[in-house]
Image 1 (cartoon, rainbow, N blue to C red):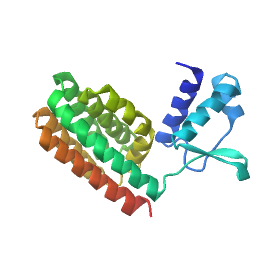
Image 2 (cartoon, rainbow, N blue to C red; image 1 turned 180 degrees about the vertical axis):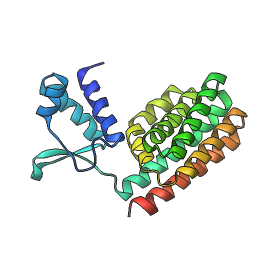
Image 3 (tube, rainbow, N blue to C red; image 1 turned 120 degrees about the vertical axis):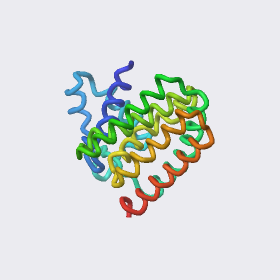
Image 4 (cartoon, helix red, strand yellow; image 1 turned 135 degrees about the vertical axis):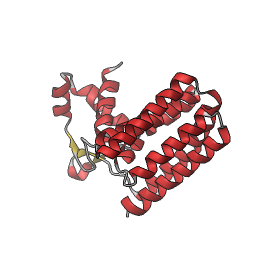
Amino acid sequence: MPLRDQVRDALQARIADGRLRPGDRLFEQDIAAEFGISRVPVREAIRMLQSEGFVEVMPRRRGVFVRGLDRHQAEELFEVREALEVFAARLAAQRGETAGVRRMAELADQARKAHEAGDIETMSTANAAFHDQLVTLAGNDLLASILEPLHGRLAWMFRLNMEPERVCGEHEELHAAIAAGDAERAADVAKRHVHSSRKMVLERILF
């Protein structure tokens, strides 16, 4: 993997899991020193993150900063997420192989146990992995490539989860529909899940 991609993936992961928060400044020289590389691939990685909406260059403040997610951006993200994840759920129910469906159940169970233990970090990670597994089960590489740039933003939203009981329940319901091979039910649950998450983010988090 090119150095720029390695740096980009590492920074995106830090934004997604909260180690880098909206408003944090990125310093090319510090990142280059951390990775033991020149500033050129770091600069290229930052350009990639900028094009994907994760960071912004602010000339007046003379720096690169992690972007927050405003209401309009969140609404656009949920519109796209609904279209793609409902489609993914339908395909997963039609195509999902046994081992992959079992892995989805394991992730849902891991999130449930973490929620009950008050382990927010583990719960968020398991929920993000659950959605990744949904896309894997869909068995459509083009769909996966379209969703990939959204992964960091979606993972960031999973960390903002203020309704863990609802999310765990909907994930369990979605798994049950996919395990049963019921494509229409899976699509319906996925759509309802996205709508519920959209309402939570727009009404309770983004004011």
